[in-house]
Image (cartoon, rainbow, N blue to C red; front, side):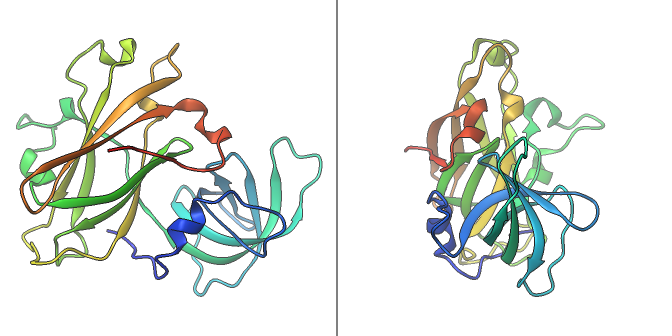
Length: 239
């Protein structure tokens, strides 16, 4: 399910604003295009056109969420958005899935059962907003590489989104019967949140909730803003 990052320091590099004076940059983005040259739509609104790569066995799948380490070859002039021709030094896949609505969960036909979502522990080490995404550094207690993690949005109060009330998001983990004694190394995940904001609202408070191996419930809160793509650095959720 998750791809472990080989370099834990990568997260800290991702928090910095790229500078043209440095030899490489690190950022979050989504792969675009169905054939070469592929491009990356970055969370800060820029577009990276991949002209070459140093990444071993590079596989590009359109629509996939990634973290990219890259070097700028040259800026593209007269582009509608900031665009750069780049060399990819390393590309890391990030687990990403759409939100699940609480109203789609239950025992009725066509709904997702609570048992499928699971009740197994999960730990959130950090959380931030970047572009339209909630990014997470998590650890899970499992020995199964196909273990499932989902983010469930409580949509049971009909007018909450219209009023811009706090959106409650709960992380769910199913270890698929392979609950481990110790958690995995830190894994990266992203979930798109733009659907939480109903016009004319442009932002919405968010509360992220999870339960770890101690059976205790934890949370972090923050304000998700639709115009976050204009912000170069991720916005961290507080305790």
